[in-house]
Length: 345
Image 1 (cartoon, rainbow, N blue to C red):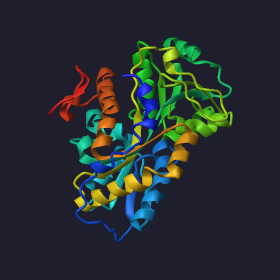
Image 2 (image 1 turned 120 degrees about the vertical axis):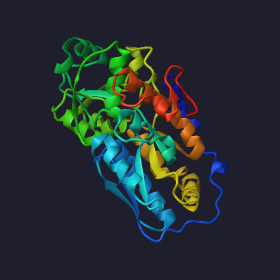
Image 3 (image 1 turned 120 degrees about the horizontal axis):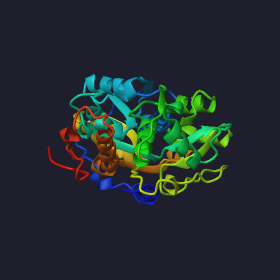
């Protein structure tokens, strides 16, 4: 599964199937603010795109959509808070969908899977391997050699083992035949990138959107993007594709968005579907954010969003088994890792 799919999204997946919305029995008119829990620290990829999207939703709904950062346990603490809340449509979450779909596989949350959520995707993101500007490593091949020979000496800043950065460095190890590293965990991708730029860590593998300003400002040196195409950002040289060094690395788009419990009142989901199609999917603010920070503008919702999300969900679930990190077999959430397909539970 190659990430050429990733770069096609801007012209394909971002065109919503407007007719796929839930049938609107009646319009939902919330009478109080909506609590939107971001289960990561401020400044990270989830926080960034959520703070672009929340005002669009708030204006359409006529109430405040209050973004609350509640980090911890690789996003599991804030996600559990949403699952524990009344299912009245007033408590939402935001995340990378691969996290919400696989928390039970990694053992961070029990008895939950992708179908606990009605999914609203906004952008697809891609990890970038970067080092401090004064690093000894000037290209990815040098870093890869060091990881293979120096192992635990190489410190890697991420937002946790199930974060985009955590899964990226683990995937790199898998694809390169295995190497050790010393992961340093922060409360979000933004803090992890800043820490690397400050010299607290030797490498970060967090998302492009969390690193772009530091790369443009000359504080981070980007060595490779986890894609089979270079990443082009205004103001910097194209970031080489990881497949220049690891041609057979398995890659999938990493989708981010907002998720409402699937058993929220139908009128809540129908109303937000309509807003997503008419307002979010046409938002110049969201498109500008994506184009500025190296993400792909890819709004979708409901069944379409679920279908787009499954490749990265399958990849993350099965990779956790291969790395020995899975607490529960992916078959418990309907994934057959032998065939890399979704099956009936």
